[in-house]
Image (cartoon, rainbow over all chains, first blue to last red):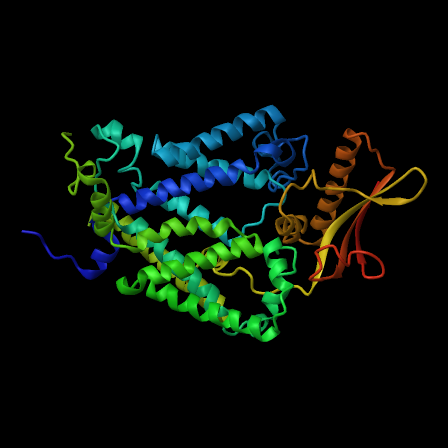
Length: 304
Length: 161
């Protein structure tokens, strides 16, 4: 007889289908490939001893200069190729742990090498996601590892819901923290911050066009308050099944607009992760409905 | 309770402590006792973007002294291949800035030497190089629209040799 789980354990630790997390893993891998790919034309300048590189830890740990010094351009290209190969590994779920570890290590390596890397919010959330995903079992379906293990790319094995909870709660905390503090941060009490941002160094041509429209400061005031309130509401309502899709649509639009208007596009990696706010069992049923028997409702039984 | 289960519970507790601590610091600047600073700051860092804004533009500027004694602006686009906002943030050398004025000054000198080498490699040797932070007013007409005299104010950083 199935024992009823304590609500705490059911929320944090129950076994669930891995499809939502696997989908996020694939999207994250593709995002990382695009992000890393943007630097490809400038590898020598950004990471090699022939570029403009000032390693962060070299002065503090001279004994490790072999590892901390910027390498020559050919070596940089080799390291970067391996780094991106690891991202392909994450996307395909191939040698998943090695690939995720390689991506983590590569990210930290180029971060300390690269010109004055600054640990922004998205850098931190991205790093957290990579660490969590390493331990998650996100390769327990839609992966070459699973194919090797049980014969099919679409077979699945149950995983703990914990990694999914950590990422979704972090997303919630980020939206809540970011929006709640703006209720009393002095610079966020009017729309002036938005008006200035649309003509600042972060502004895109779209934002500049918008800034030239004959709009009063009252318009910017309204936009700021609507965004603040909806951001707080949606961070909560995304947990309510009936309001989830509306919340996801608003939060996704918000992140896309931050990219389109202020060229801060890096947060878009959060959008695919919204799927993890759905019950993993429902996500499995959705995939089953779309792809039929190719995706079984039951986990694969391994012989050993 | 086995080891795996204990570790999972520990992860949950650490995550909750870090998030609550990060949130209370973000919202009220209250430091929750018992939570290590590194955990709080890490969590705070994930909730803290975009707290303030500028009402003027500013950017790191490199100038080279020519043989005739005149100073000319050095185009650093090829050396800082980032979008404008990111380029500005990186040129503040934030990670070194956090280590104090002496380190920052030393690192801007290093930066200037890198520029001198890169320019020389491209057949543009300069007698001297100086770095400044230029400030100029914002304008809806364009980012650089008012980047000219009499609107520019410069703050000297370093000069080499």
